[in-house]
Amino acid sequence: MRKRTYADLLLDGLIVILLLVGLLLSLAILRVPMLGPPADPLIPLTASPPWYFLPFYFVLQTFAPNQGLFILLAFFVLLFAVPLFGRLRRPRRTHVRLLGLLVCALLIWLVRVAVGQENPDASCLVCHSEIKVDYLESVHAVFDVDCVACHGGDSSTLDLERAHDRTLGFRGVPSRDQIPQLCSSCHADPVRMKPYGLRTDQFAEYLTSKHGQRWKEGDPNVAICTDCHTAHRILPAYEPQSSINRQSVPDTCARCHSNAILMEPYGLAVDQAEAFKRGVHGVALLEQGNMKAPNCATCHGTHGAIPPGVEDITKVCGTCHINERRYFNASLHKKAMDEQKISECASCHGNHEVAPADTGRPLYATCNLCHLPDSKAVTLAEKLKVLLVGAQQAVEEAEAALIEAEAQAYEVSPYRSRMIEARAYLIEALPVQHSLDVAQIEELTRRARSISEDVRSQVHGLLSVRSLRLVGLALIWGYLVLTLIVILLYRRERRRG
Image (cartoon, rainbow, N blue to C red; front, side):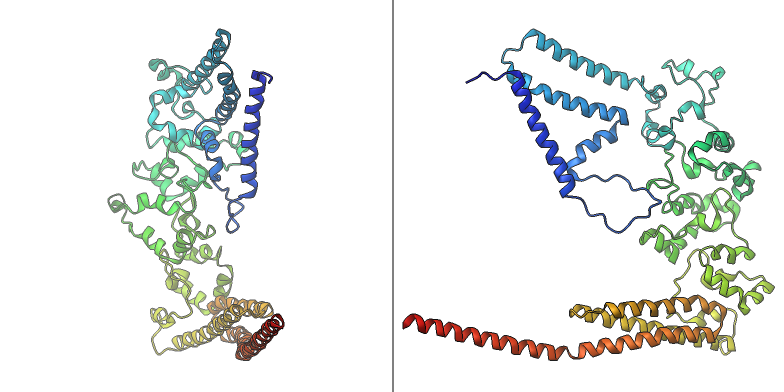
C-alpha cells in the first residue's frame, strides 16, 4: 500500500471542506425561511440569516467588512493546514517554523487592527471606549466622518496633549448652543451633501420652528440636533433602532414633551404622546405596524416643527385624507367654522387621541357639542348614521355568508368580486358624509346594500341545499357498502366451492 503523503491528506481536507460548503449551499436553497407579507420597498430590512449561516454572520457583523472577510479567509487557510498535524508525527523544524511564522503574522495583523492603523480615528476610541460601539454603528462611521470633524484635534496620535491641542482646532465637547451651527457646517453645505442626496435646508427650517426661535433667544432647554438624532449613534431613519425611525419618533418627541418639569415653564401639556398612542393613528403605526400611518412629524414637521394653526388643520389632515377634505370644503360646516374660527377636523375627531371613524358611534354625542339635541342638524346626523350603519351591516352579513360557504367547499369567487364592488361603494360613502349631502349618501349606500343583499340571498340558496347533498352522499355510501358486502360474500362462497 502506497504511503499517504501530505498532498493526499490535503486533498482529504479539501473534500471535507467542499462537502461542508455544498451542505451549507443546499440548506440555503432548500430551507429558505418564510418571507411573510410584502415589505415596504422603501424601507430596507435588517439582516436575519438562517441558523446555519450564523457563525459567518457574527464574524462579519463583529468586524469591519475587510477585517471580517480576512478572518474568514484565514480560518479556511488554517483548515487546509490541519492535515499537516496528522502527517507529521515528529514535526520537522522547517514545518514548525512555517507554522510559527503564520501564527505570528496573524497576531501582528490583529495588533495592527487593535491600535487602529487601518483607521486613524481609532486612536480616539482607545481612550473614549465608552462611545466606540455607538460611533462604529453610526452612519458617520460608515462614510468616514471621524471624530475630528466635530471635535477637532489630531486623531492620528496616541499622545494626549497633541490629540487635544487647541492650536490644531480641538474644541472638545460642543456646548448646546454651538451644536446646531456645528451640524449645519456640513449639512447645510450643498457640495458636501450632494453625493449622499441629502437636503441642505434643515438648519434654515429649524430657525423657523419654535425650537429654532427659542434657540436663537438663548433658551438652554430647547431641542437641538442631538436631542432627536443623538450624538454618536446616528442611524438612518430606515433602521428600526434609529431614534428618527417612523415608529420611534413618538418616543423621541416624548423624551421632552412628556417631561413635566421641562414643559412647565412653557405651559405645555405632557400627555400628547400617550394620547397619540391610544388614538387610531398611534395604534396603526405602533401596534399594527402600518409604516404609512402618521407620527408626530407628519403633522408638526421635522426640522421646521410648529403646531398647525386653527386655519391650517384642514390642510394638514387633508394631505392624507384628500376626499374628506374635498367634501368638507363643499359643506355648510366649512363656512360656519371659518366664521367662528373653530378648528375644523380636530373639533369632531380630536387632535392626538383621534378616535376611529366608527359608523356605530353615536353621532349626536359629537354633534351636541355645537347643536341642540332636537335640532335639524342632529336629526340629519341620525339619518346619515342609519344609512351608513345599514349599508355596513349588509356588507358584513354578506361577507359572513361567503365565509360559511367557503368552509363548506362552495366556489364563491364570483360573489367575492361583487362584494369588492359593494365595499367600494361603502368606502366611498364614508368621506361623502362630510359634505352633509343626504341624496348622494343615499345613492352610494343603496348600491352597497343592494349588492350585498343579493349576494347574501344567493349564497343562502347554496347553503340551503346542503342537507340534500348530505342525503345523497349517505345513499351513495350505503350503496357502496352494500356492494362491498356482496362482493366479499361471493368471494367467500367461491373459495368454499
